[in-house]
Length: 257
Ligand SMILES: NC(=O)c1ccc[n+]([C@@H]2O[C@H](COP(=O)([O-])OP(=O)(O)OC[C@H]3O[C@@H](n4cnc5c(N)ncnc54)[C@H](OP(=O)(O)O)[C@@H]3O)[C@@H](O)[C@H]2O)c1
Image (tube, rainbow, N blue to C red; front, top):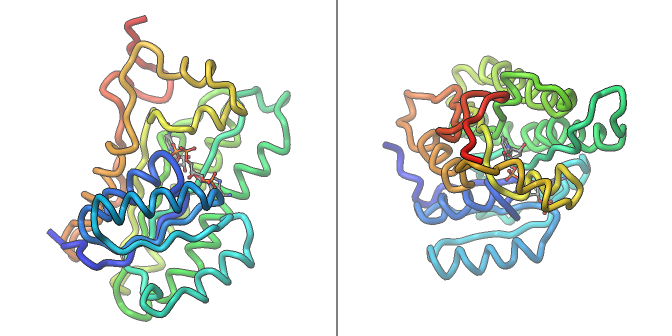
């Protein structure tokens, strides 16, 4: 097993859900976490929690992954002691709506494409060269079951996660022989703020997504990420699909009510 002690981990979308749980999980292993998202107040709270609970170093940074210049500036201007990133967790992402494509809101498409695909690319493009130079690193993308299947009402979200799957596979080939590994962790239903965001703040509708079953938690996904990150250097988890036991695929789930 590879120790995570003092490894520098850069996490996008750490203000909530899977990203937040992943930041805490790395911090508990003694890693130094760079936690990023747009909601800086949430990151400050998480930083305080990490310092208290884990006694490990943490750097909260406000970052909108859709902003190409901001991504470049933040990464280029990291304090020296934080600049040699060992592990990148590309987690920031969202779904918008669950409408038929021909009736859907185009602004939501732009948001998903700009965040889930272009944001992931900007962050990766700016962090991976340093990893290659040092001959060591690991990129772990948070994909989705939506990168393996396509469901009605999810054309653009599924397309973005299929894109993440393709980027993961191509990047792994590009990085062969460099010492930099690439993995993807692809969850089914996880109860986070994801559905609240997807339904534009409609909490009732969001709750119904998980009705009658036990969904995954952010911590379940964080465990899977930690497993990927702690394999010895000669072993790589290419792809991990993690689902609630009550969910068979994107279409079929067993519900008790
Ligand atoms: N929940 C699920 O069922 C599920 C299943 C499969 C895959 N996923 C994937 O898991 C990842 C995390 O989602 P989650 O379930 O943890 O949802 P969440 O609780 O809504 O968290 C999403 C995170 O992404 C950040 N984010 C969104 N837009 C951003 C932007 N433009 N720039 C920077 N950060 C941004 C949010 O932070 P700010 O708003 O503060 O910027 C937040 O921290 C996403 O990629 C999602 O597609 C989720």
